[in-house]
Length: 527
Image (tube, rainbow, N blue to C red):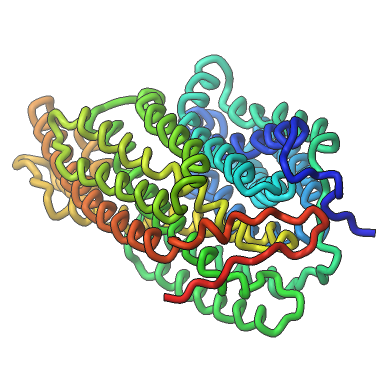
């Protein structure tokens, strides 16, 4: 007989529920660390495994591809077979795959194990978020719990370079993967005691053609966006995106015909649900694009190591954690839309400061703008995610959580591709190639700052200094332009929050039923 939420889950969470949150925070922190720590390990594993340039790209990208592709499927699968069961099963696979990745003996083996890690990681994110909704029925406590979840994700991303730098200082490159094994073992040992099980007793079987269509829709789009960010606009990336969108239309058409769809499109009729997804995606577009150029400035203009750049990222992460934790308390007194919108206004101010960063003495202003921008994003991760999960009935929380994560993945990919291409175009338009360079070096300097740095290493000191100065100025101009776009997007997103979400607070303030019955739903927003 399928199990649902235990009737003993209280309206007000107690020590057991908060202990359950601590357990759920473990995989969240680990996944966010995994997404950033591998950048530091690349030079070390390249010496050991000698991957080709193409294999190196797949080692980096396959993990994110698999997470993005399988989120929708895994979120719905957890609603059907049990969220705790999916979480623990995924944790076991993550632990095994982490060991295999750490001791990979070839580039091909590492690519396969990274793919397996991505598929397994896709089971963890929607399961953790959906189980928070199961554990915390009181809306205020649920908001605080989701704020903790969001803080783990934001903090892990910033701490990745720091943790990776420490691990690689004392151990071999595989240690960055071994880090996940004790975390998963602890989760497996404690989950049965502090996490309730929940599955939808009325769910139908997983529609396998829908799974294939969802992968066919998501993976080509993510691939195309990543290739645009890396190589620019060629023939293949736009074609891949077009193919993905076409398959996406087929996926949506099939969902309308099924009695038990893989993705319940009726969720999008909820104004708060749809608006929150849009806000999350737009916020991640600006964060992805700005993060790319800010980290690039720190390393390629200021000359910091990845570890040093990671240390400079910590203050922004800490302040975003603080604002995320304060947001649920503020939601008791102010409408959610006002809190999120006000945070986005602050974010826009931070991006506006980045417009005035210069290549010579711009580090203090860059760090200030970065801190202000990310400080304003804290309420989005906490309250926006809570609105997405809270807008869905309990039996569809896994599906709703997967949509929250998928919108974030798309947002980051759009930001890297769109804003990365914009900044690259500005660089190419602004760069002044010094006279006297060999033809190959001149072409490299004119194409990107990475090419300029590589060319500078082969040039005499005087020419090298001119190249570095010109490249720094052109790259900073790209950063300034991207900051303008981010500030405008933040203002638009703030407008959406302040209008569409102005009544969402009352809708979200409904306790989740303990018996698995359908929760009171927010009134659809009409504007």
